[in-house]
Image: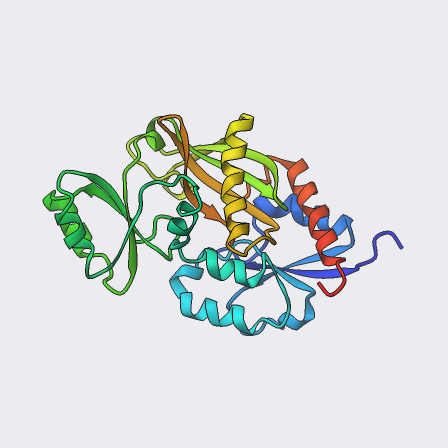
Length: 293
């Protein structure tokens, strides 16, 4: 009957934000109207009985990269399906996926990958270049450094980076500061909405923690197609079942360059786009109703 609960959906969160994030509030309300009970569950809380839920939807697990081994083990042991699927989450958790997508004709910011013990040698071979260095498994500018190769202050910052990680080394793209970073949201492969994110004055990081801002914008068909190409290439690599995605990139010299493909716990800008939250909720309802889901 109307209002009865048909499914229980765990919304995986973290101890940083254990409850349903305000950006997901309308999504949670929409799920309830559809008979799905959303319950916030901290991913590494040992008291949670995950078998009580029909599936786990990754939302604000924003510390997983700091506890990566535990996170990978938790994923493996989960007794119920995840949305997105576990194979997608594992693949997307390491930014080594960027060269894989580039090999399938997805334009990316030129990217080198080096072990922590090799980063300084890579920079020696690129004197005078302004670069950004960040771990292949990371988020929210964690252990990220920006500077000019050969500059003593930057060299000192690089020396402080943990040696046990692998790192992406990329040229700094100035359009991020001048024009902003673009994020396009997709649900079940269909374009939903987009925002443009800008860093605070004097910074390059667009995350709100560092003063960055975001506002909606309407991309043209060519930009949507460019972002869609990243999802098509992901499907070609064997990851076609993607319920939600945020495609982050920057326009440079007339091309959309992929920065990151967020398939684990992206902030989806649903609070400012209630119609998107409702659309996502209906998609989740259909997924939960699949036989054997």
